[in-house]
Image 1 (cartoon, rainbow, N blue to C red):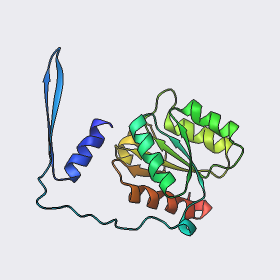
Image 2: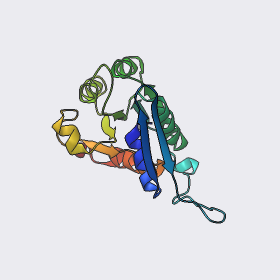
Image 3: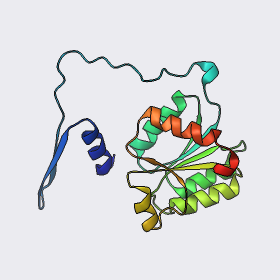
Image 4: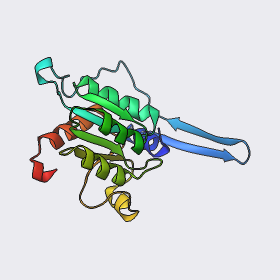
Length: 181
């Protein structure tokens, strides 16, 4: 995971992170998390979907970081989505050419190797009409727009995010009227 993602997770747990660097030797990161007293019981805020509630759409997942891509794929598949994985834009476009069924959502990181996420989204939309796009980023949408990484009013999902937040955003995007996507 990227450092900004780790930082967000640690801060979200009321923890602290520090770094010590030595030239020529590397860096040491120390993560301090609060101690839990007693047994931890955690209930899901919403139960896993039952088979009749499960999704049946296809998501093209474009993410270059393996750990993030695998976690997001797991979240999506646990809710019933079919997931096509790509590490870079060219691979995503190849999926669009080779996959004969429809692709409902492009879920893409904003910082990618070889091709910008904006360019990848435009090409995927050209090849697969009607696809919805959701950009994932550890950066605020304004920061991304200022640097030309995304264009205009697009849907973004702030990293780090959890399973429930991801599934809610994907479902909302799919359920939105076509003019709003």
